[in-house]
Image (tube, rainbow, N blue to C red; front, side, top):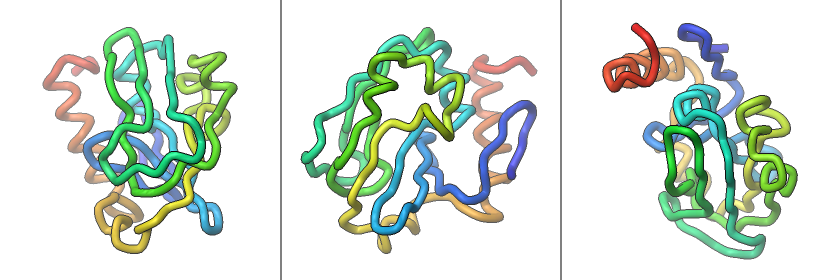
Length: 147
């Protein structure tokens, strides 16, 4: 598990380098959520809106929106695919994303359409720790975390 300061990123996940979302491969599907640093920098998650199941979206396209103490904006697809399930518990209780970002706080389950190609756009394995250190320093520079 990669760790920088109080932030932990599990090694068995893939991470989108700019949107700070994670994906977990689950057979032919992928589960998507916000990583621990992303949700911490956004602040307390107050509202999550997710597109309904059955919709196809390309990588980088919006699949929902999120409102938090320091962030209001889109949630973007880390990989192309069809949303096959949304986490209704997170829509009822958005703070689940803060409390358990890699467990109960997941956002959507996808049926990916271009996974083999798009996994190359994500960060995984030994590349996670240096990437996490770089992102942490950028967030410190922006004043999101104390120096």
